[in-house]
Image (tube, rainbow, N blue to C red; front, top):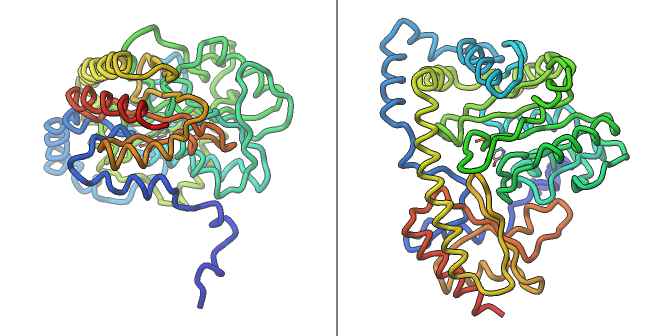
Length: 391
Ligand SMILES: Cc1ncc(COP(=O)(O)O)c(C=O)c1O
């Protein structure tokens, strides 16, 4: 029996990438990796979680914490998120909040909810690879977002990471956010505002979220076309898988039905622990993260200035975890990666995979949140050598 003959058509869109295969060797200790998109694990609030889990499991809610629960999510955490969203100028109530297992789950559910085969999904170009992976099984046509011009054609949604984007680190200005809103109005589509890095700003000033811009224009959240996806993965812990969606009740109600069918609910005890931790000095914890990540960003930007040969340019992010490099037009970053791994013991992600339309051969993504400052300095010097030697 040939099992692959039995796979549904959508499985054709789910292929392991060549890059993932290349990056398997990252487990070797001697490689300096700028490839992961992950937080610095030394900054996880381990003590706070230790006391949160122990308080929950020894308290009156211990049984509740280990029991099945409602699909909408742990009510006290949803209440906390209503307050949190209010600080972002989004006026909503608990019925506008769904807890998800990270924002990745929200992307899958939104794909399931809005995309039929051949529907148009407009996406940042380049965009978050995990979003392309989440949407692809629903067999849409991807169209790259061109913020400079208003688009006219039909589309189900516009997906964007407006703050310190993965992979570019770029933040959209208010004017660009408004242009996306105008385009969505013209094509009568929703906007998926994926904002997992929003709290991690190290310089410059905050940009109003697209959902909050709609409210500024007098729309209540239940009439808004923007779906805001948030996450505790970048501020607390990705391993707990706790994120949320804030959107109109109509959208939340449908997402709840999808969640019921998919996984019933996100882990109860993790939601309770997150609630326990965020109630006590969450801001102080985030300020601590920002101090360290800001130093790492500056170390990487400084090292790039010193070590990159002519013809290489890069973004200067005001927050988040990534810097995006553009190599001379003739260079192929996937070939460069092979050379970098084997000859220089450094890793990054070639930019090609982040483009729905196959562009970006000469681009690559560098992560600065995970490596130590020392490794950033050594590794970027190696990368400079590697690019200079690679012709
Ligand atoms: C833009 C973006 N969206 C969503 C996610 C998924 O995050 P989560 O851990 O909340 O599922 C990531 C993770 O890297 C991301 O970069």
